Length: 199
Image (cartoon, rainbow, N blue to C red; front, side, top):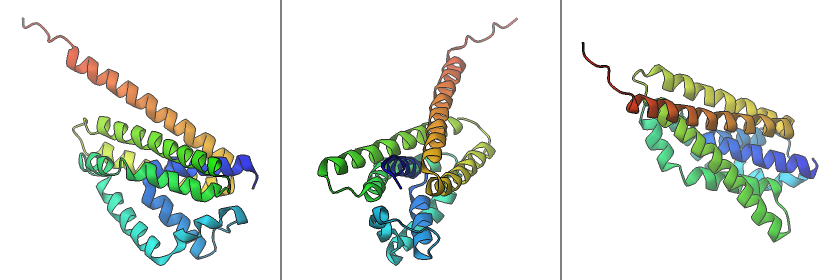
């Protein structure tokens, strides 16, 4: 794996951690434990994810997040609680993937991972807050299930083709940010429209 692929893998994994930190940690750790994810020498730092305690905590977090993320306003409360944890987790994942000896490169990897995870988390949290304005509960379940599928699929792609996964993840983050702006404009129009004059 060359330097470009390593950086792409670190960035895409960090982006995904901004959506589903526990799921990313659990699938990666499980894959390493059972040999589904063969680690090249550069990624040996990730071996800690296959530790039984780490797997148990990640599994519990994945289970809790799966249900919390599908209930209106509970998902926003969950996102608020994880506003620091997801970026920090993304930064640590990126640092473990890059695993460079140069301290300057390590700081860069940490900032790259944290920034990528924060951008994804902020987009997700804002989009979900906009979805919560909808009175019906179905949209929350649909959006959350879409995030689950996208995270799992992109994580598999990140392992097989990190550059492609990064491009798709960046496009999804861009789309999420566009949705946020569109939702905010729609909400602003809804609250500023003039009431119809009574006959």
